[in-house]
Length: 61
Image 1: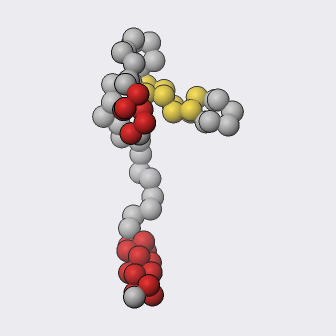
Image 2 (image 1 turned 120 degrees about the vertical axis):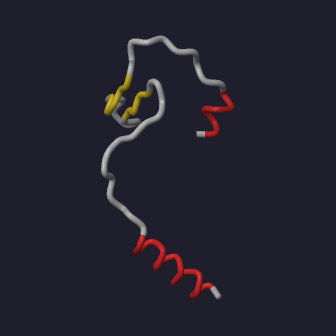
């Protein structure tokens, strides 16, 4: 049974699209940072003040 599941997973992975065509965001503002260096990789609407997210939302992501 394990072999069948592994084979099925491999087949699914082969036919899934793996390329990234572009960055599409539905958020009003965001920041993408490299955790090792702290360098900002992408930022959107950084000058507009926003309310902070709740701890539950942060832990969910």
